[in-house]
Length: 265
Image 1 (cartoon, helix red, strand yellow):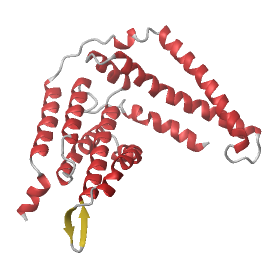
Image 2 (cartoon, helix red, strand yellow):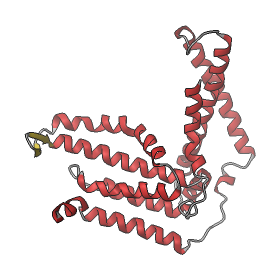
Image 3 (cartoon, helix red, strand yellow):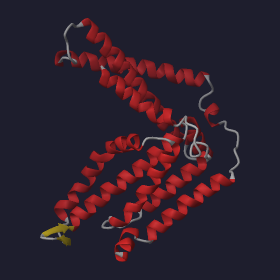
Image 4 (tube, one colour):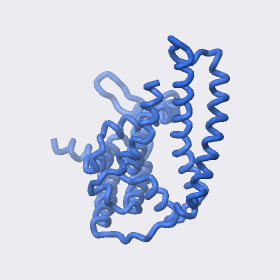
């Protein structure tokens, strides 16, 4: 029961963090979206064997979350959810790219392991940048700004519905699990013989609740009301933030800082 409750809390903990009041929170949403996209484009532009040059890119998510007062542990913990996907995507390199890349003492590291580590590191950097963006930008402002950027409305609606319905589904599962536990004494978890009916009831209740949520949103003017945002001018502080992120990302892209530091010693 506590696991389900903590899962529901974790789903919306980033949204709660986005309601903070820090210099990063007060920046224009368009500037934060543009900076994040630019950062991601430069991160994925590295070659498959360029691992050390990616290290300085850790600074942006760490610095942004620190200035915003968002715990780095919160971002890091959620970044790990992407780990299985990037491990699955890069593990084939280990077996098919066995040429030697470099030697550490008596150990020879293959190019496959190097490219595998680069894929994992790049993925974690991109996911952490997106999570920082979500943690410092209220969800409604984020989707409104995406609409103002003329992104296809169907994708934004799909993003909104998925985000909202995941929480609704978890809340229904929590309610059903509570009722199940109260009816069965000394039961720990859902027994296998009840799993089918539990999943079926959860599906039906989720459909019903999703329909009620959608109708409630329509009654409040969705999606026209969601896109009705008054234009907000960019300030000097917004432009300075964008220039700082873009300039530092370009510097790290074309200057291998770890190698440069290594040559000094």
